[in-house]
Length: 80
Image (cartoon, rainbow, N blue to C red; front, side, top):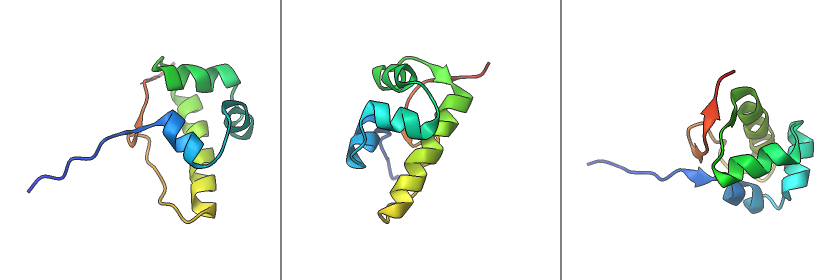
């Protein structure tokens, strides 16, 4: 038996926690434009993705939700 899981859209993960794009960006230490770009499917830097993911997971933990891995989210990441 194979279990297929879909990736989560960043906008959905953010909204589930009640954050605006600006708030998530501020908490994660990235610009609002980085969050906007990630949500639009444009590539962001790996370090930016890790900052966003770390903040999402801190907030998910506060409300008893399971942490996400970088591959759980549907986003494009490039190394620089």
